[in-house]
Image (cartoon, rainbow, N blue to C red; front, side, top):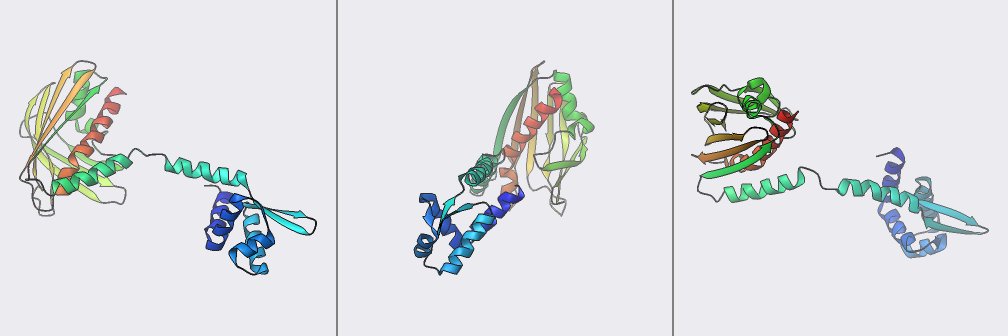
Length: 257
C-alpha cells in the first residue's frame, strides 16, 4: 500500500473522523453542518476536517465566507480498489476451511481412514516414476505450499527407508518416516510414511499405494490407508487429503517442466 493511502486510512480510523466520512458520503456539508451533526465544538470539527483534507480524504472548498467539505471520491476509489484486491479469494482460503472441518470430523471418527486421490500429469511414466523414487527429484515437489523440503530419502527398493523432513516458515520442523513395501518400476510403488512424535513413534500408520498408468500423459492414482491413530493425531490425519492434494499439484508442475 502506498504512503498516501496509509495516511488516508490512518486519518479515517479515528472514530469521529469516520463519522464525518459517513456524513460527507451522503452529500457535501458546511463546517457548521458537520459540527452540528457530530455534536462537537467548532475548533474540534475544523481540526478533524483539516486532518482529513491533509490526508486526501476530504476536499475543503472556501466559497467566500462559507467552507464546504466534500468527500474525495478519487481517494475512495483507490481505497476501494486496494481492498477489493485483498478481498479476492486466495489459493489457501478454501483449503484451510476444509482442513478445519476435516479435523472436527476426524476427532469423532473410529481411527481408520482411506484417502484416494488422482492426477493426470503431462509427462512420460518413467519421468513421473523418477519424481517419486529419486530423492533429489522428490525434494522439488514433496512439500505443501509454505513448506520447504529439508531432507528427503526414498529408493525403489523393498524395505528401503523413507524419510521426509519439512520446514515451515517459522522454522518449525516436521519429520515423517516409513519404509518402502513394494516397488515395481515404473507403475507401482507402495510405502509407509507418517509423522513421528518426539518419542520417535509414528502418530499413526499410513500405507501409501501409488499406481502410474498411461505414458504421457500419465495418470497418478494415490490411495492412503490409515490405521492405528494415536490420541491427539486427528489434525495430522485430517491434513492428509488437502496436503496430498497440494503435493500432487506440485508433482504435476515439477515433472511437466
